Amino acid sequence: MVYRCEDVRKYTDREGEKSLEKVVKICHVLADKKSFGGIQKHVFSLAEIQLEMGDTVSILLNTELVKSCPSSITPKVCGLNRSRFNPFLWLELLKALSALDPDIIHLHGRKVGYIFNFIKHFIKQPIVVTVHNTRKPVIKNEQFVFICVSKLAQTTSALKNSTIIYNAIDAPDSLWSELARERGAPFLNEGNPILYSCGRFVKAKGFDLLVDALADIPQARLWLVGEGEEWKKIHDQVVRLGLENRVWMPGHLDADHTVGLMALADLFVISSRREGGPFTLSEALRSHCPVVASPVGFVPEFLSTEQIFESIDVQSMKLKLRSILSDLVNYRASFEPIFKRADNELDLGV
Image 1 (cartoon, rainbow, N blue to C red):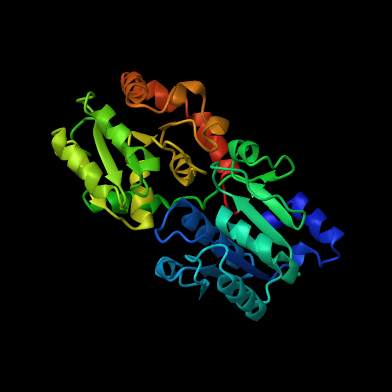
Image 2: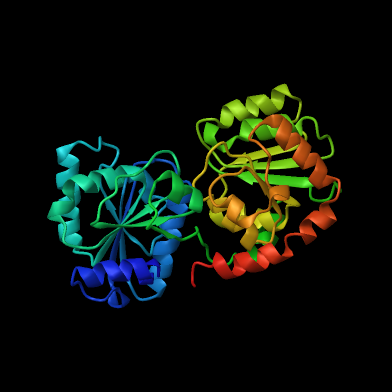
C-alpha cells in the first residue's frame, strides 16, 4: 500500500533490496501511548488492509494496546513505555525484529524514530517512519523513508523530501448509522441541531473550549464521545454550566458505534488545540458529515477558511458555530465536492 509509493521504491532500489511490490512481511512499531487514539486506530486499519492485500503483518506494541489489536493481527509485546535511551529496550526490539524477520519496518511516532536512530546500524531492512504530529522536528536520517500525514507535519518536521499521505480509512458501513440509531442516541427527534465530537479526553482535544462555546448556543445539542484523563473534568464543567440536558457523554463506545454516529449528526466539530491527522476528519468526511475544525493537521488542505475556526479559543468557536447553525442547509451543500474528494483521496484501499 504506502510502500508502493515512489520515494520508498527509490530507497529500496538504491539499497539493492528486493522490490517492495513483493513485500509479504511487514512489522509496524507503535509508540508507548497506553490509550487508544487516532494513531493506534490508523495503524490497526492499515495493517488489516495490508493483510487483505496478501501481506503478513505484525505489530510491536505495549501490553495495554493488545486488547485493542484486531484478532487478525499478530501482536508482539515490547516495553515501549521505557525510556528511549534504555539499552534493554533496544535489545528487546532487536531480538523481536530478528525473530519476526520482516521485509520492511514501519515506525509510528517520534519516540520510536529516536530509538531506531540508535539501533539502525543493526537493522538491514528498509525503515519507514510516519510523522503523525507537529510538535517538534524529527531526527533526519538517510536510512529512513519519511511519510507525513499533512503539509503542516512536513513543514514543522523540516522533512521537505518526505511523502505526504493522509490518514485514510475504509469506507464506513452504511449499517453502522442504523445500529447507532437503534442503540438510542439522544436528541435525534427533538428538532435541534446535533453537534458531535469524539476522541481521547486530553487537553489537546479542546473539549473544554467546545463546551464553553456551546453554553451560549442554546439551540445546539452535543454528543461528546470518548474516555481519558480529562473526562471527569469535562463532565464537571458540563454540570457546572447546567448543560446536562444538552450534552451526552456516554464514555467509550466501540469503533463502529462511534463512526456510525457521524452519519446521524448535523455537524462534526474538531476543537483541538493541536492534532496530527486528525483521523476523525477522515471518518467524518467519509461518513458525509459536515465538519468545522481548528486549523490543525491536514484540515487546511481539505476545508476552506469558512469551515475553519479563525483561532483556537471559545469566542471564535462560538461565532463560527452560530454562523453555521443559522444556515445548516447551505453549509451542508458546500461540502458535496469535499465529500467526493474525500471518497477518492481518503480511501485506505486505494
